[in-house]
Each structure stands twice: as structure tokens, then as C-alpha cells.
Image (cartoon, rainbow, N blue to C red; front, side, top):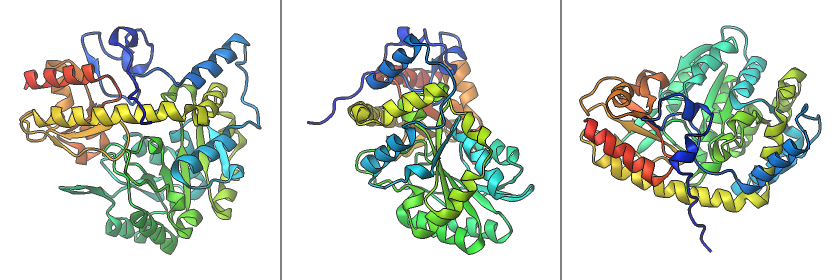
Length: 383
């Protein structure tokens, strides 16, 4: 039986939340910016957290728990790729994992490739780790976005020692093909570079789209790669502070095991408990229903964008973030400012994703159809 769509919470209930999404702007603004979702938690997550609070289970995260095994089982069940639980370590969040792994594979001043338009913290992640940003923008076409492998090779040839990969990509929602990822791994092997792949949006790949975790793309990918991921985007657990750092070969596993123990101590206990519940088979039906809801919302976004003169976007392969080109809508290089002021709709600023984001906004559509339709009504009226 096909899953029914998950129903988002009513806005009156959402406005009682205390998170960034619902506390940054006044109540007359529709917040469709930061990557939080507007659904109830999966029942298994609600239950395990309630039990922890009721018993005062709010201490430190233990050195051994079921997160690694449950994550590995989820990964094989959903993506068809085996993960060795012994090669999974946890930390506080994905960006924390990216920074610490970069520190383990680069020297101060080394170049690190990023592919703008890209998740804004990637810029600071590189500098926090001691590296220098080497920007190789995505290639854009009428049918989608892709990695500029020639540009990445040039950066490696000029001395870049690592790359932050976003797979699926944020903000475009691009799912890179196995062939592209294998070619990237081959370049990394040729030049002795490392690929650190942020795969936080992987559970949100559209039905019918083939997703390849980077470490499974080829033997070279396993040998030259790290994955950092979390349940926080799919299951709305960002505040619980837990992410997984994954390897698939001996040398990267050795690098990961050499990270300071404090990196793992930053793991949140509630994040571990909630992550185990999220990755369990019990929560699969909830995730399937979420995917149905997001697929319906993708169509609402596509319909809404089509009503705005000068706006365009490509339906994302994964995630709940729409990357909307408004460069021809007659506003300015950062349409989000105008739309916040005139439409009372809060969207992410395109230029914060790099210069390639000028004229764009990022819209979070993990909400109700009613809120999405109201947002587009407001935008159309403001223009």
C-alpha cells in the first residue's frame, strides 16, 4: 500500500515552537528559510525522548551505544550499501565533523575545494579548519547542475588537498551520479587529495531518483573519502546534536580514529537516543509518508514559481529546499531582502551561498501546502 502524505502541523501550533525558524521573525512573517521542518516527530522519537525525560536520563553520552549499528542497518536498508559499524564515529553535528576531519587531512593554508552555490557554513568550515577556500562553481545547464570535474582537477593540480562535497547538494538538491562521483574519486586518488562528503539530505531523495553514497561509488572513493551525515534534516533533530562520521577503508579509518576523543564526547545523548529511533525500522513508514508530502510540495513550489514573472527553478532531486532564480524578476541581487520587507516571507539570501547565488533565494518547503500557497500569493502580490 502506498504511503499517505505526512500532515504538517497548523501554523498556530508551530508559532509556539522556540526554535530559530519560529523565533527569528515577527508573527506576520512566514518563515521559509532555515532547514527545519513543520511536522510532528516520528512516534518512536517522541516516545524515546519522553521516556528519557521522565527518568532523568539527561547525562553524558556513553562510549558504547546502538547508534552505529542502527545507522548501518538503515543505510543498507534504504540505500543498499553496507556500512561497517566499527567505522562509524559520532560527534555533535555535521559541520563539527567536517571541520575535525579537515583538520586531520590538511595542513594550515592548504586549499580546500567547495562548489558554490553551496551551504554557507562551508566557507567558514574551511577557514576554521585552517584551510583556504578554493571555489569551483557548479556547472549550470537547462537540465540541472553538475560538478566541474575539470575545474576540480585544476584546483587539485594547483595544490588543493581536500574537497567538501555536498551529496545531495545544498541548495540545488542535485544528486550526483555514480559515474560523476567515481570520476571525482579518481581525481582525488591521482592527486593525493581527500573528499569529505556531507550527506545529510540523503534520506530525502525523491522516489525514482538513484542515490549513490560517495564511499560506495568506487574503491577509490572508499580509499580517499569520508562521509559525515545525520538524522537531523530528515527527522528535524538539529537541536539534539548528533552526527555520524563514516569511513570505508583502512587509511581514512585510521585518520578518523586519531581524532581527539573530545570530538566524540560532543555527541548529545538525546541525539543518540533520537537517532536510534529515527534509523530503526519502526520509523520507516513515517519517513515514507514524509517523502510523499515533500513530493506534493515540490509540485506546489513548481506551480508557484511558474506564476512569478522572471522567476525559474529546477525541481530538486532531493531535500526540501527549492533554489529559485529571481534574477529576471526586476528586484535586486538579493531578492530575499525585498520579499521579507514587501511580502513578509522569509527566504534564505542567495548571495550567502557564494557569488553564484546572486539573484537567487532558497525556499524551505517542508511545511503545509496552505503555508506554501500563501507564501506564493504574498510574493506575487509584492511583485
